[in-house]
Image (cartoon, rainbow, N blue to C red; front, side, top):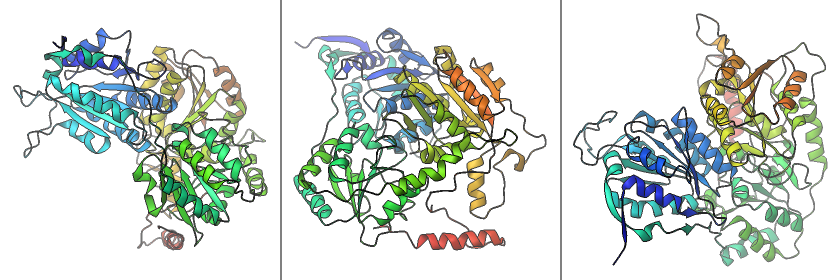
Length: 610
């Protein structure tokens, strides 16, 4: 006779999650971020309380940003562990949709459990229920469907028996990994059922390492055998798959240089002779020139986003062939690529064996040296203290404060471009950039997630004033939790990055900088005072020298240490970069727009889509 235990559906979910372990014996779900409301406080709240010693619950201040913290944790853990997020039905749930899209683009695991309508429909319509006139099965949580790798609605207590294993399969699958949404009807959460005791037995989840198909490896090896100038595009999959050693071994065995995407930056140390640096729209000349000449482009763990490819304009060799090594067939087959659908380490190892002693001519060190000769002066301290510092000089100050334990991170605005070009990453995990979704407001919450994942690391968040204003509430959470990380706020009085793009496409400065937006009273925001009011240590500095002084003081702080510095919104690193496909108006009365359109038409001629 099957032994059973009577639990509510919510209690069963929490008990089951506590039994799902990593190979090192930790719970795969490291904790739960929750903001309680009427859709989850009674059922899920009581269940979470009962397991709080094994699966701790953390209280956020905003549903979107607490989900960002959970996602950043998983990214820094390289997907070895993840977190859960629970919200009420209605706005609490829909606030998480943006974060779900972020996780979806970045292939990162997060378990989202929002409350849902009553399965019984007895109180229909329940508070916060948007009613769809033609479909009685839809709730606000259906917004998660297009941004979830797996979606389910738990409307009977026995549904957890099938939904939870399916959820864990996706969260731990290297190919399918991404957000899982289990919309949990609020009456079902509290409903009891006699669950088999065997359901709660401990289970270890191991990340699969799919082995490559020999025919795919042979095809790519033959392609490389006739190549003259191959290049590897290292993407985030290198780091997620912990394949950086395999990548270095492969490159050194065959003298094939690599270029790095935003997600793949730090795959090799910046000064490795085969690392040509950042690629694409925010790339350097050494990397982009190598890509322009390459006759075989080998993507490893990259989804070939348009910033990486210069909207498919930088791989300009007429004979260029594309190869994609990826665990996900969707990515491995993009743009007519020859696929190796496999784990990155397994694929690189098999391909190296197939290539034997094939070795290409080592890339010249001249291009890389020339690149740094151009950009290093941009990050040097200013010779005088009278002018507003540039963002490049701020990056330089943070770079000089870097140690082997430093993690620099960001997400949107000016910093992704400047850091991709200028930051000298010392090793894997030292560069954390959310650029799959480039979500403003990720930075402070993300820094907290990184610190939770690796408490020993020196985490430095680089955030502009615009992104700070988007979402800053988890500063208070971090202060409450005693999480010490540094936040450098570069205040250029608005959306400086998009203002430059607006000007670069011929537009007039309009609605981006605070001073060119509609206003009656000029904006006067005291970011240091605001951060201090939430419990952070905060200071506004007047120079790069003061910034460096406080970067040193921030190390070892027991709460966020916020350093605000005014910067010039106009300069950026002009060296490097690539064309980016941004639709410029075909008709305009402005000469500058017409000129930008001509440049856009010229850029399209370099696009090679297949």
